[in-house]
Length: 225
Image (cartoon, rainbow, N blue to C red; front, side, top):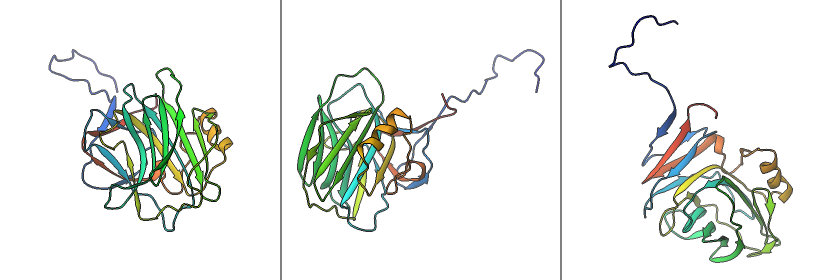
C-alpha cells in the first residue's frame, strides 16, 4: 500500500517494538519462546510460579535457565517448594560472587567468575543414587560435588522464580526442567550450539503453565532481534 499526501501532525505511526504482558493471579499456559520475565524492582512479593508436570517422586532432576542482571544481592533464581508452604526442597540461588545449590536445607557452593554483562545459561543436574551434582554456567563445567545421596523430592511441589526474602532484579528466560540427570556434555551443548530451549519434560518453556505475582512483567519482542 502506498501513501501519498502530507502526514497530519496528529497522526501517529504505530511501530510495534515489544509486547509487555501483565498476568496476575491466574495461571496461563503458552509458548514463551523468545520471551523473558522481567523482575523490575526489589520486592518481597514479586515472583513467577511455574506448574511442573510431576506424577511421581523425583530421584533425578536437571534444571536449566538463563539469567541476566547487573544487581547481584541474594538472588533466588529457581526453587521447588512444597505446595502451600515456603519450604524449598531444591533451590538454586546466587549470593555475591557465589552460586548455591540447596537440597532439603543442605547446600554446596560454586565460586562465580566476574563475567562481562551477558546472559548466563545456568544448568544443574542431580542424581539421588550418588548425590552427584553437575553444575554448568555458559558451557563451563564446575567441579563435581555431592549432596544428599538417597534423598527423594516430593512430587507435590511448585516451581518459583525470582523470590526469596527479597526478589531478584533482572530477567529470567528459557526455564526447562527434566526428571532425569542430563549428562554434563548435553548441558554444555545447549550453550555451544545455542539450543537454549530444549523442551524439558517437567517444565517446558514452550508450553509453560505459569502465574505472575507482584512487580514482574512478561516481555515478548515483536520480532526476532
